[in-house]
Image (cartoon, rainbow, N blue to C red; front, side):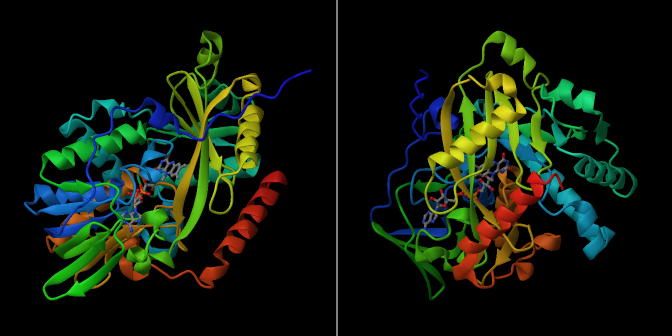
Length: 434
Ligand SMILES: Cc1cc2nc3c(=O)[nH]c(=O)nc-3n(C[C@H](O)[C@H](O)[C@H](O)COP(=O)(O)OP(=O)(O)OC[C@H]3O[C@@H](n4cnc5c(N)ncnc54)[C@H](O)[C@@H]3O)c2cc1C
């Protein structure tokens, strides 16, 4: 009789393999800053780092530990894209807007590379490995190829190449895809080490960071804002809300809460594979995404398969969501049927109605950036830099990311039911092969 393997604890591969965490004490007593930043993920830390480089004195308050949010738990895929495609952006808003969106997406990847270089974040193990989009059926392949042609002809980006079924098998080691496209504009990173590297760089540049310090409320007062935390008050000229998918921890993120739909995304990682399997699976060691509506993505990290997809609905993890993910991994790579899963974890991505992140002023003292729709490693880093530009009084061309376009989710209290409905419909359509 086969005995079931005990489920591993819910802990990310990244926290199991990360460099030591710098530790920052909770705020105790009152403090003064030029800008108070709520949230210690990539958005908050990048904003702080860039603001400090401009000579400002920022304070970052993080309710948990740095990287506790999506920035410490993501797949580490560094990509130059939005959920809304550039061709759809062009169809709806014109070519100039699509070009600017393309430039923003690429600037984001370049910035990650530049920060890793400039601040010596070697532990992030960043490499521009390129990405393969693997089509799960004919219509999905046709759509991916049409998009590629559009990128070549209209955007002048000839770097994206078509892949035959055989080439996708050579790239991935999986037999089930019918073709795909390959793009060089993507990298792979150790997300938590990147986050910790950014935090160390920010601290060296003079940023004050307080972990275990939830901002409970933001109030306007003469000459600025007042941020209340359990251990003291931060007074600052400006505040930035950088809480993204975790915008319902306290009332401080209230201006964002109803504009964001938190969606749980989950990941698993196998134990290191033996030599033969490690050579056969994803031999080109890029990052790989599928074309299904309920998208899955995968990569190899130190001979482990890391596989991501939809997590449990609701506020907590469920064993069944991880089992579904493992089953999807084994369907994609049947040779992994006996590979033990060593790490399982999940986090919240922030979906928005238009599939785009947004950034800007809430009023004359309060800024925000949020809504990365699951593609935020590079973009949140860039929007942190843009937040610092806005603080300087600059007006970068934000195209479709402008705060004015950030819409409130209608019938917000029904969002959980809405998520289940949409996800169920996507899964149904995927199962029909449409
Ligand atoms: C499982 C998963 C896989 C993903 N994979 C990828 C990927 O491969 N590639 C990609 O590009 N993107 C990916 N993403 C998305 C990406 O990780 C996020 O877009 C990005 O990390 C967002 O960064 P952030 O700083 O805005 O938010 P977060 O990193 O979520 O940080 C927000 C922080 O705010 C803190 N906070 C909340 N409220 C308060 C308060 N009141 N006071 C103080 N602090 C507060 C939270 O504790 C949290 O640490 C993934 C996300 C998940 C969850």
